[in-house]
Image 1 (cartoon, one colour):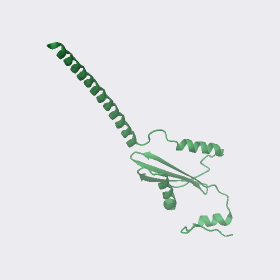
Image 2: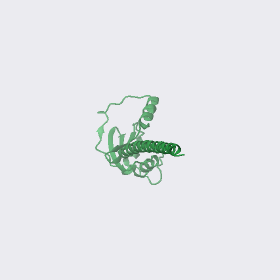
Image 3: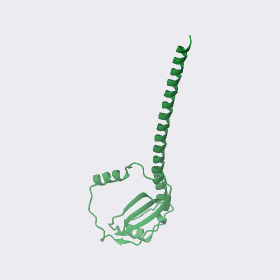
Image 4: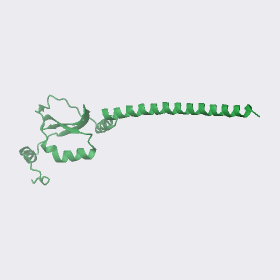
Length: 162
């Protein structure tokens, strides 16, 4: 049996044993990005050789999809995962693939504004909008008053002295 790995990747002993013995194992990796305090944080969760492990990555600014993909390709091997828990402690049940797709779609759907900065900007925008509306209303009222006064003056001029 011959196993080839991508160029530049040195397989670990565990990977070699896995390919040699054809061990049946379930590998599951989940990556979640969320906003925490002032930074964007990514959390990798993986089940590997029946062990549950977690790793946390701080991004800083909000990462784009291509940046996340690039990070996974370049730095996934360098991640330091936590001490592993046995998966026997974790309970899993088989889930329909369509349900999994629906849950993924639901999780990825954005629910309005996400960051504190965006929320602050939105509030500032609303405040400026209401102030502008108030100023425009006041300006139009003054203009109407001025036109009325002008009309009254012209009316008096006509009746004043012939």
